[in-house]
Amino acid sequence: MSFGQPCDEFPLSSLPPLIRDAVIEAQQITQAPLGLVAASALGAVSLVCQNLIDVCRLNTLRGPVSLFFLTLAESGERKTAVDKLLMKPLYQQEMQLYSRYKSELAVWKNKEELLKAQKKALLSKLNKELRKGADESETLRQLEVLQKNSAEEPVRYKFIFNDATTAAIKNQLCGKWRSVGIMSDEAGIIFDGYTLSELPFINKMWDGSVLSVDRKNEPEQMIENARMTLSLMVQPGLFDRYMERKGSVARDSGFLARCLISKPATTQGNAFINGAVIPGGSLTAFMND
Image (cartoon, rainbow, N blue to C red; front, side):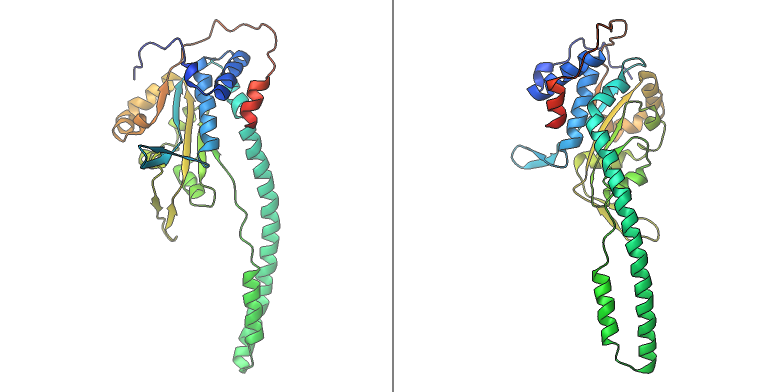
């Protein structure tokens, strides 16, 4: 798949000052291609904002603000360095939420075991009362109270996927947290794996469509008001091989039309160590805003 000559300049002036200044600072630190840094920054913004706001077009058309990025860059273009820098707060939050979830889940499981034991004892008591024709109203009341005291399972707030099956992503979006991002600075594993195996599903998430999920021996579940960001960096050769295998499907399904695809001009050979550049106010403001 040909994209012609790389563009020498990324239109920085098109970005809001907060994002523009952070992109400039991140580029100075990593010395990565400016377009690559901008795509990574906008992907992070999309992931953060998509669950908070929608965009209205022509007064009547309302849809997600979610963005899909495909950034083609060779090895050595500092893809990982850029990702670690701009996505750091999100990765940290994901780990904090996961740690809290594990603690809450352990407490919940212990309570559930206790409730099961209490329910078993009450049901045994109820059976005896029914056999003897005794008054079972108090036992029924206790069972009702027990049911009301049953706590809901803790919510797993997972919002970053970088190597997952479509089924795993659907399962997350059927739950209470319905805002996710497929994010990777080495997306070869995604293009060679199962994450993009159902492009119509990915397209529907970009559209903000409602989707019914049916599985054998399980009740129907609905994915609605879900949001998905896609921010993938991949070597051009790996992407070309994906296009050879799946290119017609990616085009005809409309997946590529939904993506902002770029191949920034390389900075290899022009990146020099001139002393450490310490993150300053622009990146701090971007990460904390």
